[in-house]
Image 1 (cartoon, protein in one colour):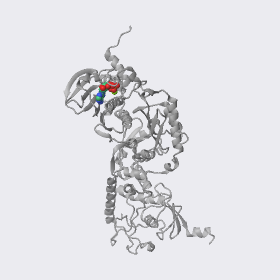
Image 2 (spheres, protein in one colour; image 1 turned 90 degrees about the horizontal axis):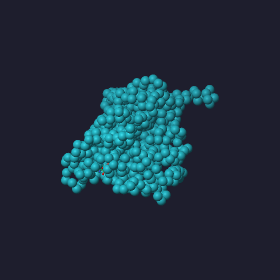
Image 3 (tube, rainbow, N blue to C red; image 1 turned 180 degrees about the vertical axis):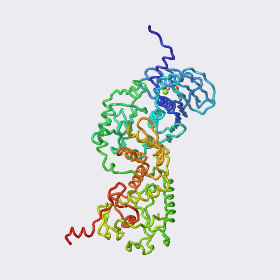
Image 4 (cartoon, rainbow, N blue to C red; image 1 turned 180 degrees about the horizontal axis):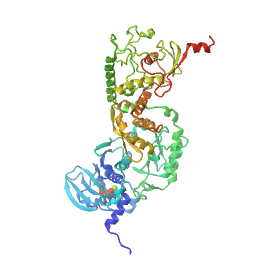
Length: 633
Ligand code: ADP
Ligand code: MG
């Protein structure tokens, strides 16, 4: 027997089409806020959205008498007749979102228009309207959706963990906030700020807010216009790619869309530029007359139908190919935006840390200082990591910040440094422990010959030593840091905007398994849905290393060799990272002062035979060897 379904069942079926999970609620409410012309939208979510989604906007509001219509199905202010359906200029138009949401939640909408002196609210419980009441509220609309799917238990059961759901919420938020850079947005989860996005005229800046300065730096602007269709936006330099296509953002007339053909054009444009299995990153924006596209073919409007898809495909592919041909991708590959990265972190905090470190070391020095010595012998670079932020303006390599030796130091020094007496002691010198007897050959003079901008050749008592400048400096920094770290735990710095990092499933499992250990090292992480993890805090001394890079290093350590790494292994990995990043590089030309200081430090720091990675820092050629080679004996 065929029967007409009751309205409540019809509504619940309809709700299922549009509202799949909390993220769908966020998407629909954000779209409404943007359609209402809001310039500020605040989103607040509890328990991944299953307990609460609240979206507050400062848009034009809804008159009190229209509130019942706003939550009625197929009621919209955005379409007048059927023709409008084929030139949609708003994000919403079907008039079913609020009705669907209110059908499957405890729903409250408060609104006030600019003309009204007071606001009004409507409450709907699982589709049952509780009527309209006056209320006080600012101009705009606030919608609260509590206990999603409370009356459809099967659906509620399908919701994943709060973290997974929050991942979807965040993605929905990201898509809309990316599409509307001029609107300021905030997102909070369980009272904690996840995103706080000021309005901006620069799309690049908004993208950077979400995905960090490294990607922002790697963005290549693209643009083309074929009369009907304007394409503008960014693609990432091939040095930035992902193992998945989720960072390919396509927007059409302000709406985020997915389109296989366009994704294919994108992949095609990068052919030969990326390793197999890697996906390009893009933020592309298409504008075209609304009548050239049908947005009414997908329940959540994620997919659209273009009148001339082939033309669009060619336009995208052609634009990118031309861009890549005219861009010198190689030089950009090498350009490391370290200075900007460093500057992106709080420079004041970095300076404060540096100072703390110097003070600490001075204090330590006072304890170690041998009697009779009034000043410390030598100076090492105070952790280059935090100090790095001071160099935002430096064009290339920051000079090796070596504080020169105090030459008034007694002649008791075992190493003759007479050739360097003109050098002045630097007051801000960071002292290190006094010289310990060396098992390795000490350089006889603090001068050396730099060859190929990477090796130093110096005379030692036994003969001659060839030093790898990067490996040595790295080792020196490592030892300094280790002393500091063993004395007290690493300071942790919370990120204002937690950084998402994509991991594979086994990496994810390994990281979560060691979550507490990582937390003790100052690295706070939490799962963020899918295979994404959020880095909430990280060791402050890593100020000029991207949290993402830092986590990657730790993950590699966690995955290496199959054995469970202990705290020391992980700590070591962090120290390696800091020292490697901060050390002078192969290819850096050193001044003679820098060379001397490096050689001095070599004598002062323990265990400089090998860099922290175990590579030798120096090769010694004894005089006997040389004599033998030259057939002198
Ligand atoms: P649609 O967006 O497709 O029109 P909705 O169910 O999402 O359908 O919203 C119904 C109507 O309620 C909208 O057409 C609009 O007039 C009004 N409305 C909903 N949310 C807002 C808001 N945040 N600000 C102003 N008006 C709103
Ligand atoms: Mg809507």
